[in-house]
Length: 148
Ligand code: CA2
Image 1 (cartoon, rainbow, N blue to C red):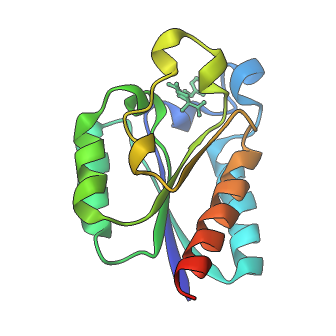
Image 2 (cartoon, protein in one colour; image 1 turned 180 degrees about the vertical axis):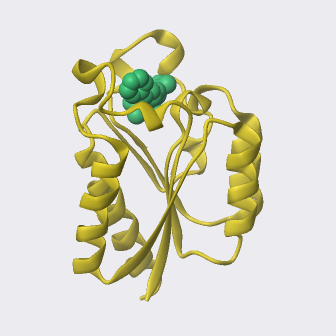
């Protein structure tokens, strides 16, 4: 069975508790259980990790080295400036999809840049929490194509 790690970065533990107009009303636990249901249908094993700390995310990515077929990450604000997380992805070489709940390209200028996107299979932005499901399907589709 394929294994996928789902990483959520800083402040995403607050999902559903504040700013529903930007991020919707679902909690992170709701997002996880919905994604687990989809993963069950697709016969893929998921593991979830959330941290507000850059180093903890980097440590988790290092631990992921060689242990997952792919990674889905919402890096939160680290998206826009964490060269350290970018270097971790470059080191582990695990294929990943970057997902954002909001459309980062229509928000403040500082959110328009992702320092990770150039290493990603692709980026999903602005489709709400449904984007996690799209990220999973997109990741698996790319992995399937690569193994043919
Ligand atoms: O749109 C996204 O998914 C973001 O990655 C979310 C980050 C933001 O810094 C990125 O620019 C775009 C912030 C997550 C904050 O999540 C909250 C959720 C509810 C209440 C407060 C924060």
